[in-house]
Length: 115
Image (tube, rainbow, N blue to C red):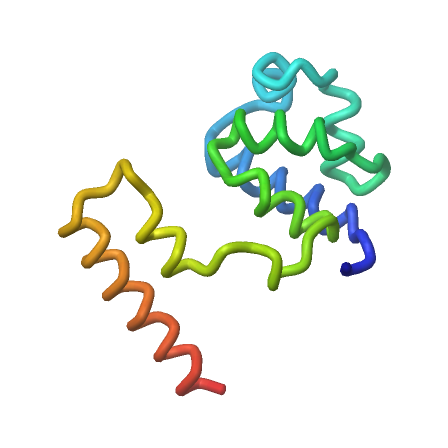
């Protein structure tokens, strides 16, 4: 397991909060976590618990596992692969799954070629 890097998870949360056009107060309202505490998490001053990370993930519409990984609570190997996640998503149609697989494959191939 990776060593926790809570400053990293804090900046990750802040970036996603800003992308979602949420104020810290609105995120506090959605998560039930005080805005001073959220601010301290974003600045890397406080260490969020797994439960708080789960609340934040729900409010920001991101996978809980993504925040756990950012916080060093999960190794990347423990997470399901992108292809498996796409195939397992019951909310996607077959054509949507196929399109996402093609996009993912093109990005993965491009990244390998750059290396």
